[in-house]
Length: 325
Image (tube, rainbow, N blue to C red; front, side, top):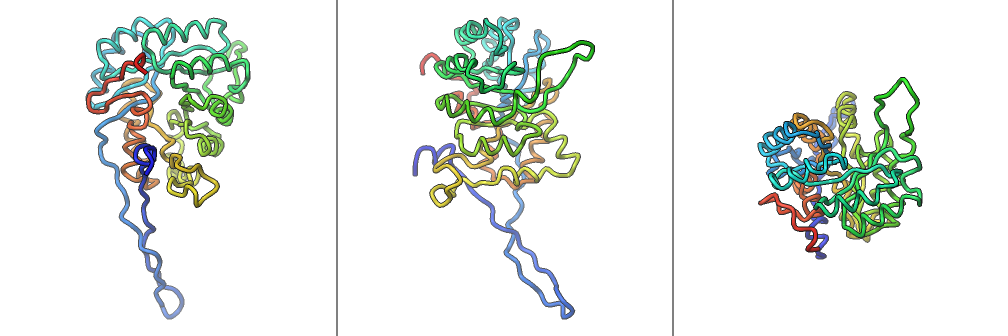
């Protein structure tokens, strides 16, 4: 068994369910394959929120500490350069809660310089949003190459984007942020870990298919994705999108040999205020149950996958010194 199979690639699958139905005028019974007991969520003993934004003041820091410690949770905090000092202090004071991610505008001529500043201050990831070109435009490759060199996770907004300005024209288009562009980035920069936000809402299939062939690509399901599916009664639709299995390997030419199973490409996140952690935990539980996700895979989705990526010990909730890599 390979190291990947024993770690990220460890998987289990559920059997098929059991039912018997009376058919025809004689009420003859037709036996169907037995259905295994439904897998129900248990409380995770470690949570890593891979997507939350810096609130910008000490009151927010205090709220984060109170809420996240209550759930044994850590958070990757997306931080503008203006809030750098606040987050540096928060990480130093509460390393069991805060993980520093920077945030830059790809079209800002100072983007590379800002990424260097974030890296020099111990930040381990970067967030990108609202590019003027498509995410996979070669003009952005210098930025991505720097993140790859630094070993920084790259988190991209994908899918529909909110609007808050209506009185004057604003630059931006959700079409620039389709999840398929992350396929190009993963192929061009295979040593970097890429995360797409919101599973590409509404381009879910596109997001999943991009992940299928890229073992370094992950997605969170933050934003309106889960509330929408809950409202429609279609949480189980996700297993139609995340359809391939990890153990198919050589037997199935349509999946990566030794690659992650479909559900292992999904990681937990909130993209809300600290008070949003508990409602997001509840929705994530509902999604896992509706799709019969096996328990070992659930633990990875809750946080073990990103802990492995970031070099975090789930027991101590501490990030390794990235300069030691």
